[in-house]
Length: 125
Image 1 (cartoon, rainbow, N blue to C red):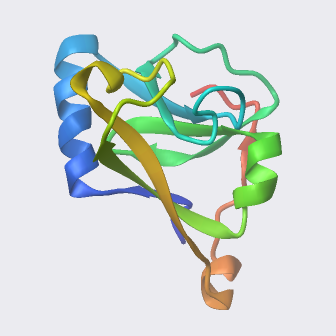
Image 2 (image 1 turned 90 degrees about the vertical axis):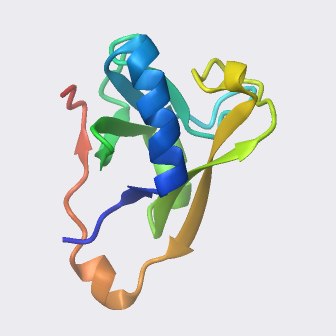
């Protein structure tokens, strides 16, 4: 199976720091206001998900969701969550650390597209 979402080692280390302080975590990328096209890291359950959210996978023991509208733009790309210095304008948990999660993407190859898992909407894991 081709992964829809991955994570860098550096971003995984930040998740470890955040998990120590906040417990279980999740990611959501909405495409809304502020840094809406950036992935937000939240305490698991802090964001109410519904049938318009798509589960893309699990990165470093965190479920990653995206709004259906945003997924229409990203569906042909593999996403990699990374981290960079700088203060974002979202409610994401890494912001007080002077960091922000970002998305890097690349187009799937034709073979990878054939091996993509089915997307699941409305699944709250």
